[in-house]
Image (cartoon, rainbow over all chains, first blue to last red; front, side):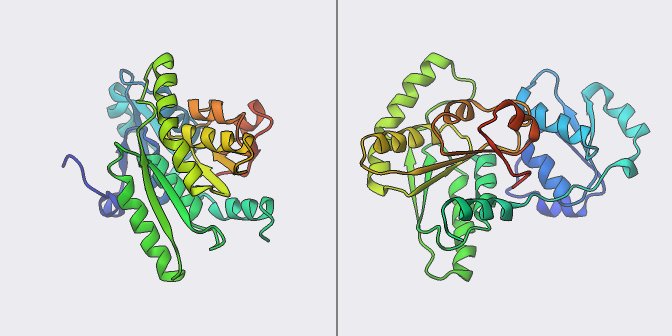
Length: 104
Length: 169
């Protein structure tokens, strides 16, 4: 398929996700607890996409490769080494805002 | 736009009804955000029945990778739209997270503050995508916002006036 409104269903039933480095794709996948391999497109390199993918890899949440090393990565990957991704905490933001605005 | 909308709706998810009415400002070329916002507000109305919100559009201030010089021109022309809008809404608080659209709105509010017409608190939350460098909006609004929040510790080190609360989306 080309575009769907939501990949939530497909994500839910997947065992492994291979994705580009877009933040939305990465975070949605990690939040569903699915193992993720991020593929960096060397030619289309949008540096700011890369920052998040690199950090997620450094923290041990995703595997990371480029188009030419994808096959090799799939063959040698150890998905059990990936750490579970803790969700973000918007409640911390709400508390912070309540505090500075004097709403607490 | 897209990712920014998703992030900002997450930021809104835990806010109480004191943060009402909500005025959303979108770029005119943004096709997908309106649906996400309606969906968010509909759900919210299930819990908070008196929930109110509005939606306005302004011309997009900058295309991705648009040159610096032409960006100044297009941003200035966006201010021609955002200034009357900000004056009309007179928000107590502006919450934004980085799309080009937020710069003219914040600058308008800042200007209205200087002119003693309305003092608005500007809260900027840099996108979770920004780990080591700030977006262009962030670099500008670092100097104009009241509270500048980053989501990764490296940025807190580089921008000492920023606030680090961890990952909040």
